[in-house]
Length: 419
Image (cartoon, rainbow, N blue to C red; front, side, top):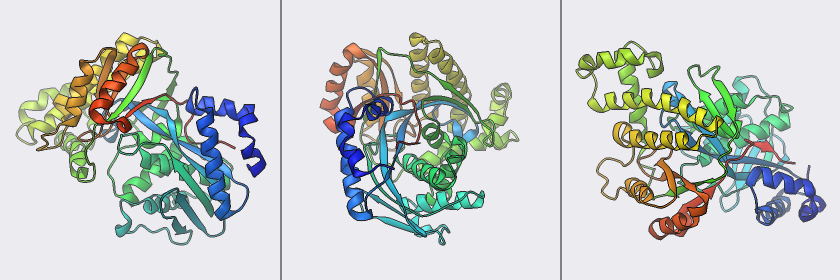
């Protein structure tokens, strides 16, 4: 547990400097010292001296757009922004206070889902507690003050970041750190789908719980295949651009992708597309078009091709084959645009994602670009030559705003207890 003397002396702590470099990258020490100290001061004024710090990162989807919910394959990574918590124990309840927001409080004896809490942070806390209790894990009370530089609206999963943070606090404080990473991902996913009310696959929570670059095959959601891969593309910068748009009214459009893929699977006698053989799918298209929409068929095409791209992309990262990697990212982007059809919502004339993608393709130094995450509104991801990155960033800021263009790094660790 950190005390005031420890926190005030972070500038002279070589171990903390190593932690900062690992979690946040180069040239971040001064910023993180100020961040940790400010959080400790705010937390200690309300909850007393002493506290344990936890860090939960955002994530990017490297490849595998809308495949996880049909038992597909993904390549994902945790990134160098996080939600940071200072935590102390308390009796009988969980209190979480995010700086700038009202605190939320959940009694350990009241963890039933509530319809009127859907879409709120309190539902996520209640949902994680419920999952742990259902599975026989220990739960207990704590007070947490949090701060976050996980940019909202940019598709890096601030909600999953928060969920897995709660999972890890409970894991360390009451379960001796013995709960495995994928169980934490499943607990977070349960909270988001069953309590928060958002239909989603397991990609977001898994990327954040696992850390680093992760290849995940969800053929079995109970026992998925995980492989960690070192990220060694040292001459590429990763740039996220929040192009604008409101996600609040797009839940049905996100859900339609999963539902339409499952309609195709059902027409072929399966629950998920992963259970359908690709050859059988293509042979069945003459009959399928009498049963499902043309868009559903196109989205199924994307699923089968995207799974293959994930495999090829993972191999390229492992072999540090930059050209092959960028080819796969660009191909994934074209497929999302044309067959998955999630680059702008119905009736949208602003088309901010297509604008950002096409401006990026015309920009010097951009080697690959695609829609990022759920799509329809929000974010693109670009892989840019480091020597040309400043020019690209300035160009995109002039169109999308200074606060909507982010250069990020891959982080080796998922959600962790820091000290």
